[in-house]
Every structure is written in C-alpha cells, then in structure tokens.
Image 1: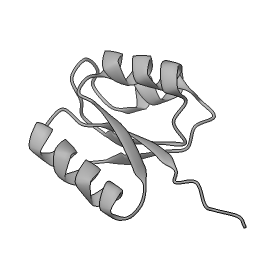
Image 2 (image 1 turned 135 degrees about the vertical axis):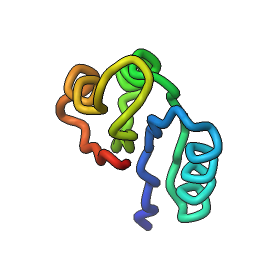
Image 3 (image 1 turned 90 degrees about the vertical axis):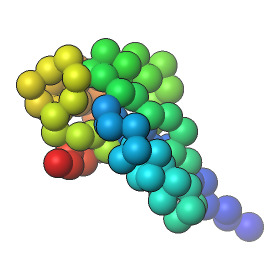
Length: 84
C-alpha cells in the first residue's frame, strides 16, 4: 500500500498571528507545516538544515526588502510561493 507522505512546509512570516493561522490551516489540510521563521536569517537556517519540500514566504519580512533574496540563497531548487 502506498501511503502519501505529507509535504514538509516552511512558513516564513514575521506576523505571529498570521503565521500561526497559516500553520494550523496547513496542518488541518494534512500538510507537515513543521516550522515558522520570522526573519530572513531564520528562513535560510531552517531551509539549510531541514530541506523543506515547499517554502511559503511573505514578500516583506524582517531583514530584507523582499522575500526573493532568502528564497534564492537558501535552496534554489525548493519550490516556493511568495505572498503579501
């Protein structure tokens, strides 16, 4: 029997309420939203250490002017979605 392994998702959001709500929604849908990073530096560290399947990143986070920079420096091969 093939059991589907849930995608491991890293959330990058510096507003705690938004990040927690997103994480709970993803978990409820069956995903492994395993971590929340509140800054660009945290995002790069998590991505380097844990190799997420997908990165959901706020377009404006602490430490950089946009979410594009940490997305390209962490794991360029990881799919990512930027949101506002």
